[in-house]
Length: 597
Image 1 (spheres, helix red, strand yellow):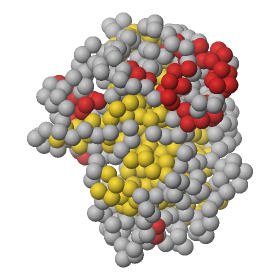
Image 2 (cartoon, rainbow, N blue to C red):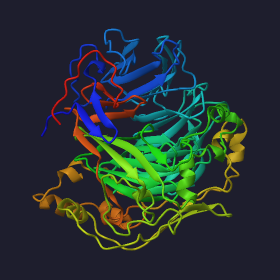
Image 3 (cartoon, one colour):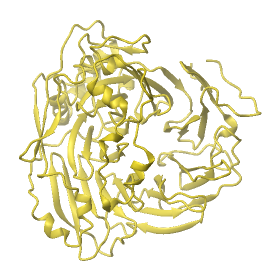
Image 4 (cartoon, helix red, strand yellow):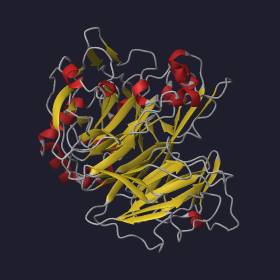
Protein backbone atom coordinates (compact mmCIF):
# COMPACT_ATOMS: atom_id res chain seq x y z
CA UNK A 1 0.00 0.00 0.00
CA UNK A 2 2.91 2.37 0.71
CA UNK A 3 4.64 1.66 -2.58
CA UNK A 4 5.55 4.80 -4.47
CA UNK A 5 3.76 5.01 -7.81
CA UNK A 6 5.49 5.83 -11.06
CA UNK A 7 2.38 6.04 -13.21
CA UNK A 8 -1.32 6.75 -12.84
CA UNK A 9 -4.35 6.67 -15.12
CA UNK A 10 -6.99 9.32 -15.80
CA UNK A 11 -9.75 9.52 -18.40
CA UNK A 12 -7.29 10.99 -20.91
CA UNK A 13 -4.76 8.20 -20.48
CA UNK A 14 -1.66 7.21 -18.51
CA UNK A 15 0.77 9.66 -16.93
CA UNK A 16 4.27 8.22 -16.56
CA UNK A 17 7.20 9.28 -14.41
CA UNK A 18 10.32 9.84 -16.52
CA UNK A 19 13.10 8.77 -14.21
CA UNK A 20 15.83 9.95 -16.61
CA UNK A 21 14.27 13.44 -16.64
CA UNK A 22 14.69 13.90 -12.89
CA UNK A 23 16.45 17.08 -11.79
CA UNK A 24 18.29 17.37 -8.49
CA UNK A 25 21.64 18.32 -7.06
CA UNK A 26 24.41 16.92 -9.30
CA UNK A 27 25.29 14.11 -6.88
CA UNK A 28 21.65 12.89 -6.80
CA UNK A 29 22.00 12.23 -3.07
CA UNK A 30 18.74 12.77 -1.14
CA UNK A 31 18.89 16.04 0.73
CA UNK A 32 18.62 16.03 4.53
CA UNK A 33 15.56 18.23 4.72
CA UNK A 34 15.34 18.67 8.49
CA UNK A 35 14.97 22.33 9.31
CA UNK A 36 15.25 23.48 5.71
CA UNK A 37 12.91 25.63 3.72
CA UNK A 38 10.61 23.97 1.17
CA UNK A 39 12.05 23.09 -2.22
CA UNK A 40 10.52 25.38 -4.86
CA UNK A 41 10.66 25.29 -8.66
CA UNK A 42 10.30 28.12 -11.21
CA UNK A 43 10.12 27.91 -15.01
CA UNK A 44 10.65 30.41 -17.80
CA UNK A 45 10.80 30.17 -21.59
CA UNK A 46 13.52 32.23 -23.26
CA UNK A 47 12.27 31.67 -26.84
CA UNK A 48 15.44 29.88 -27.84
CA UNK A 49 15.47 29.11 -31.58
CA UNK A 50 17.02 25.68 -30.93
CA UNK A 51 13.80 24.39 -29.40
CA UNK A 52 15.27 24.11 -25.90
CA UNK A 53 13.77 27.33 -24.61
CA UNK A 54 12.63 26.16 -21.19
CA UNK A 55 14.76 26.99 -18.15
CA UNK A 56 14.23 25.67 -14.63
CA UNK A 57 15.36 27.01 -11.28
CA UNK A 58 15.06 25.20 -7.95
CA UNK A 59 16.39 25.64 -4.44
CA UNK A 60 17.63 22.85 -2.17
CA UNK A 61 18.76 23.94 1.30
CA UNK A 62 21.40 26.67 0.89
CA UNK A 63 21.82 25.91 -2.81
CA UNK A 64 20.17 27.38 -5.91
CA UNK A 65 20.38 25.69 -9.33
CA UNK A 66 19.58 26.88 -12.84
CA UNK A 67 19.37 24.35 -15.71
CA UNK A 68 18.17 23.98 -19.28
CA UNK A 69 14.93 22.02 -18.85
CA UNK A 70 14.55 19.31 -21.48
CA UNK A 71 11.33 17.85 -20.08
CA UNK A 72 10.06 14.77 -21.90
CA UNK A 73 12.44 15.27 -24.83
CA UNK A 74 15.85 14.34 -23.44
CA UNK A 75 17.45 13.08 -20.27
CA UNK A 76 18.56 15.66 -17.73
CA UNK A 77 22.27 16.45 -17.67
CA UNK A 78 22.93 17.39 -14.07
CA UNK A 79 26.66 17.80 -14.57
CA UNK A 80 26.21 21.06 -16.45
CA UNK A 81 24.09 23.57 -14.55
CA UNK A 82 24.01 26.98 -16.20
CA UNK A 83 24.38 28.54 -12.78
CA UNK A 84 24.80 27.27 -9.22
CA UNK A 85 24.89 29.38 -6.06
CA UNK A 86 25.54 28.43 -2.44
CA UNK A 87 24.50 30.93 0.21
CA UNK A 88 25.89 31.39 3.71
CA UNK A 89 23.89 32.55 6.71
CA UNK A 90 20.56 32.39 4.87
CA UNK A 91 18.60 30.08 2.59
CA UNK A 92 16.55 30.78 -0.54
CA UNK A 93 12.84 30.28 0.14
CA UNK A 94 11.11 31.21 -3.14
CA UNK A 95 11.83 32.63 -6.59
CA UNK A 96 10.14 33.94 -9.72
CA UNK A 97 11.17 34.70 -13.31
CA UNK A 98 9.95 37.73 -15.25
CA UNK A 99 8.58 36.29 -18.53
CA UNK A 100 8.43 39.71 -20.20
CA UNK A 101 12.18 40.31 -20.12
CA UNK A 102 13.43 36.75 -20.66
CA UNK A 103 15.71 36.17 -23.65
CA UNK A 104 18.29 33.55 -24.57
CA UNK A 105 21.00 35.95 -23.35
CA UNK A 106 19.40 37.27 -20.17
CA UNK A 107 16.71 36.50 -17.59
CA UNK A 108 15.54 38.37 -14.50
CA UNK A 109 15.16 36.08 -11.50
CA UNK A 110 13.95 37.24 -8.08
CA UNK A 111 15.00 35.14 -5.09
CA UNK A 112 13.57 35.54 -1.58
CA UNK A 113 15.51 34.47 1.51
CA UNK A 114 14.88 33.19 5.02
CA UNK A 115 16.41 36.32 6.58
CA UNK A 116 14.13 38.68 4.64
CA UNK A 117 16.29 39.85 1.74
CA UNK A 118 15.31 39.70 -1.94
CA UNK A 119 17.96 39.29 -4.63
CA UNK A 120 17.66 40.10 -8.33
CA UNK A 121 20.02 37.92 -10.36
CA UNK A 122 20.69 36.96 -13.96
CA UNK A 123 21.75 33.29 -13.92
CA UNK A 124 22.61 33.34 -17.63
CA UNK A 125 25.03 36.24 -17.32
CA UNK A 126 25.89 35.00 -13.82
CA UNK A 127 25.32 38.48 -12.48
CA UNK A 128 23.77 39.78 -9.27
CA UNK A 129 22.00 43.00 -10.17
CA UNK A 130 20.60 44.18 -6.86
CA UNK A 131 19.91 43.15 -3.29
CA UNK A 132 16.74 44.53 -1.72
CA UNK A 133 16.16 44.86 2.03
CA UNK A 134 19.86 44.16 2.41
CA UNK A 135 20.07 45.67 5.90
CA UNK A 136 16.70 44.13 6.83
CA UNK A 137 15.32 47.57 7.63
CA UNK A 138 12.05 46.88 5.81
CA UNK A 139 11.27 43.43 7.24
CA UNK A 140 13.43 41.00 9.21
CA UNK A 141 11.32 37.87 8.69
CA UNK A 142 11.33 35.07 6.14
CA UNK A 143 10.15 35.78 2.60
CA UNK A 144 7.19 33.48 1.97
CA UNK A 145 6.30 34.47 -1.61
CA UNK A 146 7.73 36.71 -4.33
CA UNK A 147 6.07 37.52 -7.67
CA UNK A 148 6.59 39.93 -10.52
CA UNK A 149 3.52 42.13 -11.02
CA UNK A 150 1.85 40.88 -14.23
CA UNK A 151 2.54 43.11 -17.20
CA UNK A 152 5.39 44.97 -15.52
CA UNK A 153 9.12 44.77 -16.16
CA UNK A 154 10.07 46.54 -12.93
CA UNK A 155 7.44 46.05 -10.21
CA UNK A 156 7.37 43.05 -7.90
CA UNK A 157 5.51 42.03 -4.75
CA UNK A 158 7.06 40.31 -1.72
CA UNK A 159 5.25 38.63 1.21
CA UNK A 160 6.79 37.92 4.62
CA UNK A 161 5.92 35.74 7.58
CA UNK A 162 4.89 38.89 9.49
CA UNK A 163 1.76 39.03 7.32
CA UNK A 164 3.06 42.06 5.40
CA UNK A 165 3.49 42.47 1.65
CA UNK A 166 5.74 45.07 0.05
CA UNK A 167 5.63 46.50 -3.46
CA UNK A 168 9.07 47.20 -4.92
CA UNK A 169 10.43 48.87 -8.03
CA UNK A 170 13.73 47.48 -9.27
CA UNK A 171 14.81 50.98 -10.26
CA UNK A 172 14.52 52.33 -6.70
CA UNK A 173 16.88 51.91 -3.76
CA UNK A 174 15.83 50.77 -0.31
CA UNK A 175 17.43 53.62 1.60
CA UNK A 176 19.77 53.58 4.57
CA UNK A 177 17.12 54.19 7.25
CA UNK A 178 13.93 52.35 8.13
CA UNK A 179 11.02 53.56 5.97
CA UNK A 180 8.39 55.89 7.38
CA UNK A 181 4.84 54.97 6.43
CA UNK A 182 1.61 56.91 6.01
CA UNK A 183 -1.76 55.18 6.09
CA UNK A 184 -3.31 55.06 2.65
CA UNK A 185 -6.26 52.71 2.99
CA UNK A 186 -7.74 50.58 5.75
CA UNK A 187 -10.38 47.89 5.88
CA UNK A 188 -11.36 44.85 7.88
CA UNK A 189 -8.15 43.09 8.93
CA UNK A 190 -6.00 44.80 6.31
CA UNK A 191 -4.27 48.13 5.81
CA UNK A 192 -2.18 49.70 3.06
CA UNK A 193 0.55 52.24 3.76
CA UNK A 194 2.66 54.33 1.43
CA UNK A 195 6.30 55.09 2.07
CA UNK A 196 6.92 58.74 2.98
CA UNK A 197 10.09 59.97 1.30
CA UNK A 198 11.31 63.05 -0.51
CA UNK A 199 12.88 60.90 -3.18
CA UNK A 200 11.73 57.63 -4.76
CA UNK A 201 12.64 54.64 -2.60
CA UNK A 202 11.45 51.14 -1.80
CA UNK A 203 9.02 49.93 -0.75
CA UNK A 204 6.38 51.81 -2.70
CA UNK A 205 3.60 50.28 -0.60
CA UNK A 206 3.22 48.10 2.46
CA UNK A 207 0.20 45.83 2.83
CA UNK A 208 -0.66 44.39 6.25
CA UNK A 209 -3.01 41.47 5.78
CA UNK A 210 -4.67 39.34 8.47
CA UNK A 211 -3.11 37.76 11.53
CA UNK A 212 0.14 35.81 11.31
CA UNK A 213 2.10 34.84 8.22
CA UNK A 214 0.92 35.52 4.70
CA UNK A 215 1.79 32.12 3.26
CA UNK A 216 1.12 32.66 -0.44
CA UNK A 217 -0.49 35.10 -2.85
CA UNK A 218 -1.48 34.75 -6.49
CA UNK A 219 -2.45 37.26 -9.16
CA UNK A 220 -5.55 36.64 -11.25
CA UNK A 221 -4.96 35.77 -14.93
CA UNK A 222 -5.74 39.35 -15.98
CA UNK A 223 -3.53 40.79 -13.23
CA UNK A 224 -6.32 42.89 -11.71
CA UNK A 225 -6.94 40.90 -8.53
CA UNK A 226 -4.78 39.42 -5.82
CA UNK A 227 -5.70 36.35 -3.73
CA UNK A 228 -3.93 36.01 -0.36
CA UNK A 229 -3.78 32.83 1.76
CA UNK A 230 -2.95 33.58 5.39
CA UNK A 231 -2.06 31.67 8.52
CA UNK A 232 -5.21 33.00 10.23
CA UNK A 233 -7.18 30.72 7.91
CA UNK A 234 -8.60 33.46 5.69
CA UNK A 235 -8.53 33.78 1.94
CA UNK A 236 -8.76 37.47 1.05
CA UNK A 237 -9.21 38.64 -2.52
CA UNK A 238 -8.29 42.24 -3.35
CA UNK A 239 -8.61 44.49 -6.33
CA UNK A 240 -4.88 45.09 -6.68
CA UNK A 241 -4.70 48.58 -8.17
CA UNK A 242 -7.26 50.13 -5.81
CA UNK A 243 -6.43 47.87 -2.83
CA UNK A 244 -10.11 47.12 -2.27
CA UNK A 245 -11.29 43.93 -0.61
CA UNK A 246 -13.46 41.96 -3.03
CA UNK A 247 -14.32 38.97 -0.83
CA UNK A 248 -13.17 36.56 1.87
CA UNK A 249 -13.36 32.90 2.80
CA UNK A 250 -12.43 31.02 5.97
CA UNK A 251 -10.77 27.59 6.13
CA UNK A 252 -12.57 24.81 7.97
CA UNK A 253 -9.85 25.16 10.59
CA UNK A 254 -6.17 26.02 10.69
CA UNK A 255 -4.13 28.16 8.34
CA UNK A 256 -4.32 28.39 4.56
CA UNK A 257 -1.01 27.51 2.91
CA UNK A 258 -1.60 27.79 -0.84
CA UNK A 259 -3.88 29.38 -3.41
CA UNK A 260 -4.38 29.43 -7.20
CA UNK A 261 -6.77 30.82 -9.84
CA UNK A 262 -8.64 28.98 -12.57
CA UNK A 263 -7.41 29.88 -16.08
CA UNK A 264 -10.46 32.09 -16.69
CA UNK A 265 -10.28 33.78 -13.28
CA UNK A 266 -13.74 32.57 -12.23
CA UNK A 267 -12.69 30.25 -9.40
CA UNK A 268 -10.04 30.16 -6.70
CA UNK A 269 -8.79 26.99 -5.01
CA UNK A 270 -7.08 27.14 -1.60
CA UNK A 271 -5.52 24.43 0.55
CA UNK A 272 -4.05 24.26 4.01
CA UNK A 273 -3.96 22.74 7.46
CA UNK A 274 -7.52 21.38 7.36
CA UNK A 275 -6.32 18.78 4.80
CA UNK A 276 -8.97 20.07 2.38
CA UNK A 277 -9.00 21.81 -0.97
CA UNK A 278 -11.67 24.52 -1.05
CA UNK A 279 -13.18 25.91 -4.26
CA UNK A 280 -14.40 29.52 -4.04
CA UNK A 281 -16.45 31.35 -6.66
CA UNK A 282 -15.00 34.75 -7.52
CA UNK A 283 -18.28 36.16 -8.88
CA UNK A 284 -20.52 34.84 -6.08
CA UNK A 285 -17.98 35.26 -3.25
CA UNK A 286 -18.85 31.90 -1.74
CA UNK A 287 -17.53 28.37 -1.28
CA UNK A 288 -18.98 26.06 -3.93
CA UNK A 289 -17.18 22.81 -3.07
CA UNK A 290 -14.58 21.16 -0.88
CA UNK A 291 -12.33 18.24 -1.71
CA UNK A 292 -11.09 15.64 0.78
CA UNK A 293 -8.36 13.23 -0.29
CA UNK A 294 -5.23 14.29 1.60
CA UNK A 295 -4.27 12.90 4.99
CA UNK A 296 -2.16 15.87 6.02
CA UNK A 297 -1.63 19.52 5.16
CA UNK A 298 -2.08 20.58 1.55
CA UNK A 299 1.05 22.42 0.43
CA UNK A 300 0.34 23.29 -3.24
CA UNK A 301 -2.74 23.66 -5.45
CA UNK A 302 -2.63 24.34 -9.20
CA UNK A 303 -5.04 24.34 -12.16
CA UNK A 304 -4.24 22.33 -15.27
CA UNK A 305 -4.89 24.77 -18.11
CA UNK A 306 -4.38 22.04 -20.72
CA UNK A 307 -7.09 19.70 -19.42
CA UNK A 308 -9.62 22.33 -18.34
CA UNK A 309 -12.24 22.43 -21.10
CA UNK A 310 -15.70 23.54 -22.19
CA UNK A 311 -17.70 21.61 -24.77
CA UNK A 312 -20.80 23.40 -26.01
CA UNK A 313 -20.43 23.48 -29.77
CA UNK A 314 -18.94 26.96 -29.75
CA UNK A 315 -15.37 27.93 -30.48
CA UNK A 316 -12.78 26.91 -27.88
CA UNK A 317 -12.80 28.96 -24.72
CA UNK A 318 -10.34 31.84 -24.54
CA UNK A 319 -8.92 31.72 -21.06
CA UNK A 320 -7.12 35.03 -21.41
CA UNK A 321 -6.85 37.98 -23.72
CA UNK A 322 -4.88 38.06 -26.93
CA UNK A 323 -1.18 38.75 -27.02
CA UNK A 324 -1.88 42.24 -28.36
CA UNK A 325 -4.22 43.00 -25.46
CA UNK A 326 -1.67 41.75 -22.98
CA UNK A 327 1.34 43.60 -24.36
CA UNK A 328 -0.63 46.84 -24.57
CA UNK A 329 -0.58 46.83 -20.79
CA UNK A 330 3.14 46.19 -20.30
CA UNK A 331 3.83 49.83 -19.52
CA UNK A 332 2.48 50.00 -16.00
CA UNK A 333 2.19 53.75 -15.75
CA UNK A 334 -0.10 53.84 -18.77
CA UNK A 335 -2.90 52.17 -16.86
CA UNK A 336 -3.49 48.47 -16.21
CA UNK A 337 -7.22 48.27 -16.87
CA UNK A 338 -7.83 45.63 -19.48
CA UNK A 339 -10.87 45.36 -21.67
CA UNK A 340 -13.72 43.07 -20.66
CA UNK A 341 -13.35 41.47 -24.09
CA UNK A 342 -10.49 39.47 -22.60
CA UNK A 343 -12.93 37.48 -20.50
CA UNK A 344 -13.32 33.91 -21.62
CA UNK A 345 -16.38 32.51 -23.30
CA UNK A 346 -16.43 30.07 -20.46
CA UNK A 347 -16.92 32.79 -17.86
CA UNK A 348 -19.71 34.33 -19.93
CA UNK A 349 -21.45 30.98 -20.19
CA UNK A 350 -21.13 30.55 -16.45
CA UNK A 351 -22.98 33.77 -15.76
CA UNK A 352 -25.41 34.42 -18.62
CA UNK A 353 -26.43 31.21 -20.36
CA UNK A 354 -28.86 28.76 -18.82
CA UNK A 355 -28.25 25.96 -21.28
CA UNK A 356 -26.32 22.96 -19.97
CA UNK A 357 -22.68 22.89 -20.95
CA UNK A 358 -20.04 20.26 -20.50
CA UNK A 359 -17.51 22.04 -18.32
CA UNK A 360 -14.52 20.46 -16.63
CA UNK A 361 -11.94 22.31 -14.61
CA UNK A 362 -8.98 20.11 -13.73
CA UNK A 363 -6.81 21.03 -10.79
CA UNK A 364 -4.26 19.20 -8.70
CA UNK A 365 -2.89 19.27 -5.19
CA UNK A 366 0.10 17.84 -3.34
CA UNK A 367 0.65 17.65 0.37
CA UNK A 368 2.80 16.70 3.30
CA UNK A 369 1.27 13.22 3.10
CA UNK A 370 3.46 12.68 -0.04
CA UNK A 371 0.33 12.24 -2.16
CA UNK A 372 -0.66 13.76 -5.49
CA UNK A 373 -4.40 14.32 -5.97
CA UNK A 374 -6.12 15.31 -9.20
CA UNK A 375 -9.63 16.77 -9.09
CA UNK A 376 -12.30 17.44 -11.70
CA UNK A 377 -14.69 20.31 -11.09
CA UNK A 378 -17.67 19.65 -13.35
CA UNK A 379 -20.97 21.30 -14.30
CA UNK A 380 -22.97 19.33 -11.73
CA UNK A 381 -21.06 21.31 -9.09
CA UNK A 382 -20.87 24.61 -10.98
CA UNK A 383 -24.53 24.54 -12.09
CA UNK A 384 -26.31 22.26 -9.58
CA UNK A 385 -29.83 23.00 -10.87
CA UNK A 386 -29.10 22.34 -14.55
CA UNK A 387 -29.37 18.92 -16.24
CA UNK A 388 -26.25 16.85 -15.78
CA UNK A 389 -23.98 16.11 -18.69
CA UNK A 390 -23.48 12.63 -20.06
CA UNK A 391 -20.31 12.08 -18.02
CA UNK A 392 -20.04 12.45 -14.26
CA UNK A 393 -16.81 12.37 -12.35
CA UNK A 394 -16.04 11.35 -8.79
CA UNK A 395 -18.27 13.88 -7.05
CA UNK A 396 -20.03 13.14 -3.79
CA UNK A 397 -22.78 15.72 -3.39
CA UNK A 398 -23.53 15.71 0.33
CA UNK A 399 -26.66 17.86 0.16
CA UNK A 400 -29.60 17.56 -2.17
CA UNK A 401 -29.78 21.34 -2.31
CA UNK A 402 -26.18 22.05 -1.63
CA UNK A 403 -25.80 25.46 -3.19
CA UNK A 404 -27.74 27.98 -5.23
CA UNK A 405 -27.15 28.09 -8.94
CA UNK A 406 -25.03 30.78 -10.43
CA UNK A 407 -27.09 33.90 -10.87
CA UNK A 408 -29.62 33.10 -8.11
CA UNK A 409 -29.75 34.60 -4.64
CA UNK A 410 -26.23 34.39 -3.38
CA UNK A 411 -23.87 36.67 -1.52
CA UNK A 412 -22.26 39.17 -3.81
CA UNK A 413 -19.76 41.97 -3.39
CA UNK A 414 -20.94 45.31 -4.67
CA UNK A 415 -19.64 48.80 -4.13
CA UNK A 416 -22.19 51.42 -3.14
CA UNK A 417 -22.25 55.07 -4.13
CA UNK A 418 -21.03 56.12 -0.73
CA UNK A 419 -17.83 54.15 -1.17
CA UNK A 420 -18.79 51.34 1.20
CA UNK A 421 -18.49 47.80 -0.09
CA UNK A 422 -20.84 45.35 1.61
CA UNK A 423 -20.68 41.58 1.61
CA UNK A 424 -23.98 40.15 2.83
CA UNK A 425 -23.76 36.58 4.01
CA UNK A 426 -26.83 34.41 3.50
CA UNK A 427 -27.61 31.16 5.26
CA UNK A 428 -26.94 28.29 2.80
CA UNK A 429 -29.78 26.07 1.68
CA UNK A 430 -30.31 22.99 3.79
CA UNK A 431 -31.51 19.59 2.63
CA UNK A 432 -31.69 15.96 3.62
CA UNK A 433 -28.25 14.42 3.99
CA UNK A 434 -27.92 10.88 2.79
CA UNK A 435 -24.79 9.83 4.66
CA UNK A 436 -22.01 11.11 6.82
CA UNK A 437 -18.72 9.35 7.26
CA UNK A 438 -17.14 8.69 10.65
CA UNK A 439 -14.36 11.13 9.83
CA UNK A 440 -16.83 13.90 8.97
CA UNK A 441 -18.72 13.32 12.23
CA UNK A 442 -15.47 13.80 14.12
CA UNK A 443 -14.90 16.96 12.09
CA UNK A 444 -18.06 18.48 13.51
CA UNK A 445 -16.94 17.89 17.09
CA UNK A 446 -14.08 20.29 16.58
CA UNK A 447 -16.14 23.44 16.52
CA UNK A 448 -19.37 24.68 18.14
CA UNK A 449 -22.21 25.08 15.65
CA UNK A 450 -23.57 28.57 15.28
CA UNK A 451 -26.55 29.19 13.04
CA UNK A 452 -26.49 32.96 13.08
CA UNK A 453 -26.06 34.89 9.88
CA UNK A 454 -23.61 37.72 9.78
CA UNK A 455 -23.08 40.81 7.76
CA UNK A 456 -19.53 41.89 7.06
CA UNK A 457 -18.76 45.40 5.95
CA UNK A 458 -15.61 46.06 4.01
CA UNK A 459 -14.22 49.55 4.19
CA UNK A 460 -12.92 51.11 1.03
CA UNK A 461 -12.23 54.60 -0.15
CA UNK A 462 -14.46 56.43 -2.54
CA UNK A 463 -13.79 55.76 -6.19
CA UNK A 464 -11.60 53.16 -7.84
CA UNK A 465 -8.47 55.08 -8.74
CA UNK A 466 -5.29 53.05 -8.67
CA UNK A 467 -3.31 53.71 -5.54
CA UNK A 468 -0.29 52.08 -7.17
CA UNK A 469 -0.17 54.59 -10.01
CA UNK A 470 -0.35 57.33 -7.38
CA UNK A 471 2.91 56.17 -5.83
CA UNK A 472 4.75 57.28 -8.95
CA UNK A 473 3.67 60.89 -8.45
CA UNK A 474 6.30 62.89 -6.59
CA UNK A 475 3.66 64.94 -4.82
CA UNK A 476 1.50 61.93 -4.17
CA UNK A 477 1.86 62.05 -0.40
CA UNK A 478 -0.18 65.22 -0.19
CA UNK A 479 -2.88 63.65 -2.32
CA UNK A 480 -3.00 60.58 -0.07
CA UNK A 481 -3.99 62.80 2.84
CA UNK A 482 -7.25 63.69 1.08
CA UNK A 483 -8.40 60.06 1.00
CA UNK A 484 -11.07 59.17 3.52
CA UNK A 485 -9.84 56.59 6.00
CA UNK A 486 -12.12 54.30 7.95
CA UNK A 487 -11.22 52.12 10.87
CA UNK A 488 -13.43 49.07 10.89
CA UNK A 489 -10.99 46.52 12.26
CA UNK A 490 -12.68 43.80 14.26
CA UNK A 491 -11.32 41.21 16.59
CA UNK A 492 -8.65 38.91 15.17
CA UNK A 493 -9.30 35.29 14.38
CA UNK A 494 -7.69 32.08 15.42
CA UNK A 495 -3.91 31.72 15.88
CA UNK A 496 -1.52 29.23 14.39
CA UNK A 497 -2.79 25.68 13.96
CA UNK A 498 -1.03 22.65 15.41
CA UNK A 499 -0.23 19.93 12.95
CA UNK A 500 -1.77 17.13 15.03
CA UNK A 501 -5.10 18.92 14.83
CA UNK A 502 -5.39 18.23 11.11
CA UNK A 503 -8.02 15.88 9.78
CA UNK A 504 -5.59 13.10 9.01
CA UNK A 505 -4.48 12.83 12.62
CA UNK A 506 -7.94 12.58 14.21
CA UNK A 507 -9.33 9.12 14.72
CA UNK A 508 -11.69 7.24 17.00
CA UNK A 509 -9.05 7.03 19.74
CA UNK A 510 -8.35 10.74 19.92
CA UNK A 511 -11.19 11.80 22.22
CA UNK A 512 -8.74 13.50 24.57
CA UNK A 513 -7.44 15.66 21.75
CA UNK A 514 -10.96 16.53 20.71
CA UNK A 515 -11.84 17.58 24.25
CA UNK A 516 -8.76 19.77 24.35
CA UNK A 517 -9.67 21.33 21.03
CA UNK A 518 -13.20 22.19 22.12
CA UNK A 519 -12.08 24.03 25.25
CA UNK A 520 -8.48 25.13 24.79
CA UNK A 521 -8.44 28.46 23.01
CA UNK A 522 -10.82 31.34 22.65
CA UNK A 523 -9.79 31.36 18.99
CA UNK A 524 -11.93 28.27 18.52
CA UNK A 525 -14.95 30.28 19.60
CA UNK A 526 -14.06 32.89 16.99
CA UNK A 527 -13.87 30.17 14.36
CA UNK A 528 -17.26 28.87 15.46
CA UNK A 529 -18.78 32.26 14.70
CA UNK A 530 -17.94 31.83 11.02
CA UNK A 531 -18.97 28.16 10.83
CA UNK A 532 -22.30 27.79 9.07
CA UNK A 533 -21.99 31.12 7.25
CA UNK A 534 -20.90 31.68 3.67
CA UNK A 535 -17.42 32.46 5.00
CA UNK A 536 -17.14 28.86 6.16
CA UNK A 537 -20.06 26.54 5.35
CA UNK A 538 -20.42 23.32 7.31
CA UNK A 539 -19.17 20.17 5.64
CA UNK A 540 -22.67 18.98 4.74
CA UNK A 541 -23.69 22.32 3.25
CA UNK A 542 -21.47 22.18 0.15
CA UNK A 543 -20.61 19.34 -2.24
CA UNK A 544 -17.69 17.16 -1.18
CA UNK A 545 -15.38 16.22 -4.05
CA UNK A 546 -13.49 12.96 -4.20
CA UNK A 547 -10.13 12.92 -6.00
CA UNK A 548 -9.99 11.54 -9.51
CA UNK A 549 -6.46 10.33 -8.69
CA UNK A 550 -4.78 10.01 -5.31
CA UNK A 551 -1.31 8.46 -5.39
CA UNK A 552 1.72 8.37 -3.12
CA UNK A 553 4.57 9.56 -5.33
CA UNK A 554 7.42 10.49 -2.95
CA UNK A 555 9.20 9.55 0.27
CA UNK A 556 9.21 13.09 1.66
CA UNK A 557 6.56 15.80 1.74
CA UNK A 558 5.69 17.29 -1.62
CA UNK A 559 6.31 21.01 -2.16
CA UNK A 560 5.81 21.62 -5.92
CA UNK A 561 3.11 20.96 -8.52
CA UNK A 562 3.32 22.69 -11.92
CA UNK A 563 1.31 21.82 -15.04
CA UNK A 564 3.15 22.24 -18.36
CA UNK A 565 1.97 21.57 -21.90
CA UNK A 566 3.43 18.07 -22.26
CA UNK A 567 3.97 17.10 -18.64
CA UNK A 568 3.41 17.93 -15.00
CA UNK A 569 6.24 18.60 -12.58
CA UNK A 570 6.43 17.69 -8.90
CA UNK A 571 9.15 18.08 -6.30
CA UNK A 572 9.67 16.79 -2.79
CA UNK A 573 11.68 17.99 0.16
CA UNK A 574 14.51 15.55 -0.67
CA UNK A 575 15.36 17.82 -3.59
CA UNK A 576 14.13 15.70 -6.49
CA UNK A 577 12.27 17.52 -9.30
CA UNK A 578 10.23 14.92 -11.20
CA UNK A 579 8.68 15.06 -14.68
CA UNK A 580 5.47 13.16 -15.40
CA UNK A 581 4.76 12.81 -19.13
CA UNK A 582 1.19 13.38 -20.21
CA UNK A 583 -0.52 10.58 -22.15
CA UNK A 584 1.10 10.15 -25.56
CA UNK A 585 3.89 12.62 -24.80
CA UNK A 586 6.68 10.19 -23.87
CA UNK A 587 9.68 10.83 -26.15
CA UNK A 588 12.48 8.58 -24.99
CA UNK A 589 14.65 5.71 -26.09
CA UNK A 590 14.90 4.46 -22.56
CA UNK A 591 12.27 2.16 -21.04
CA UNK A 592 10.43 3.44 -18.01
CA UNK A 593 10.02 0.91 -15.24
CA UNK A 594 6.60 1.30 -13.67
CA UNK A 595 5.37 -0.01 -10.36
CA UNK A 596 2.21 -2.04 -10.08
CA UNK A 597 -0.85 0.17 -9.76
